[in-house]
Image (cartoon, rainbow, N blue to C red; front, side):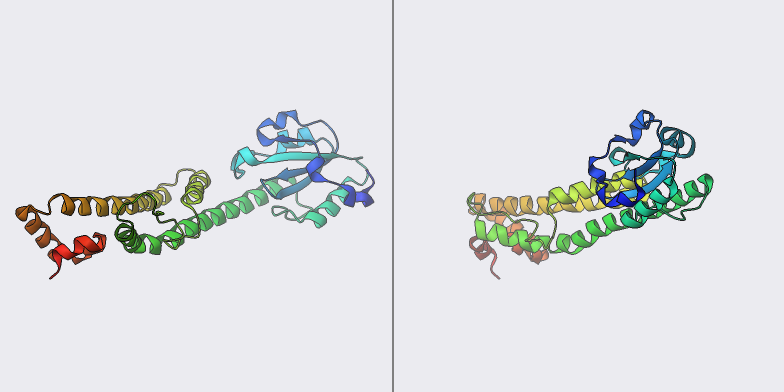
Length: 256
């Protein structure tokens, strides 16, 4: 290929294989592209692409291996390095370091950068989850109490959404982040423990709604039972925050 025609290269149209199927790479000279989900991770060149990957690339450390592919562009060995350099300058892959390092140095550079990327991804996902949940979880009791009071448990009343809690993500998106985080950290116990704690807090949000329903139901079904109502009155006096769970009608039963 003419090295001056790189603008004609459309990477999305190039042949490619998943990293797990790298044994199917062709024994041709050319430039190869390591592709992530949405970005070019690395660009390299070889006079034999299949052999290059068999001998020099240990892929265990690649992030999200199932989402990594190798595309290739066949080219003459003449000017191959220049073609590689031009493509690197054009696309600026995130893992390319020195253009002149040897195979061993190149591999270590890749490993270091991938470790950094993995840590960045872990930190990002943890922040996405904890920052967006910490305050909303604490404020959730108020939102759900208002819902309980306003709806009086009528089905046509819209239940609180994640927006009502101050969350910018839906629960489905948060769950996806948690799954991605689990993949990224590969079972690191300390972070998984934090995830479990967050999941428990999410469960407690749902339980608050259930508690509100149960408390109101208890009041309504025992309104004429003086013994039960007296016990409830003592309980609410000891725990004033429980009044937030009551409907306006039921609050009248416990006016001081």
